[in-house]
Image (cartoon, rainbow, N blue to C red; front, side):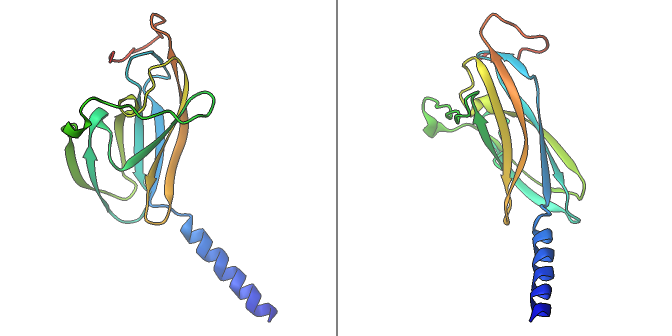
Length: 164
């Protein structure tokens, strides 16, 4: 009976290790870690195919060049979720584009994503951003970046971004 339990434990551990090998890795960086209130907040999202085969991705792009395959979690300095932005006449949508392309093994695709087009980051403060992508088995999450939004008139060093 002990041999059975040992065998069951070894098989369970092997299956758990296989499940922890997601086909993608996501890494994000802030375009500018400090921006002026009212300017765009953009991040670079790098998606790497960590599998041993091509993966076909169909991606639709909308407002702010946001790729439909990503989900964003934006929190304020108190850890509270930041609300999504609302636009007049949402029924008109936003003309976007669609891309279908394979991602080769070990290939990385990096894209700019204008997070402030989706989330209301116009108030001064510190915001944390994390990106995740749904996979058939689990959700693949990125690292977390922090962006500081300063009051109008306090221009940070570097590129200030476009004013909205």
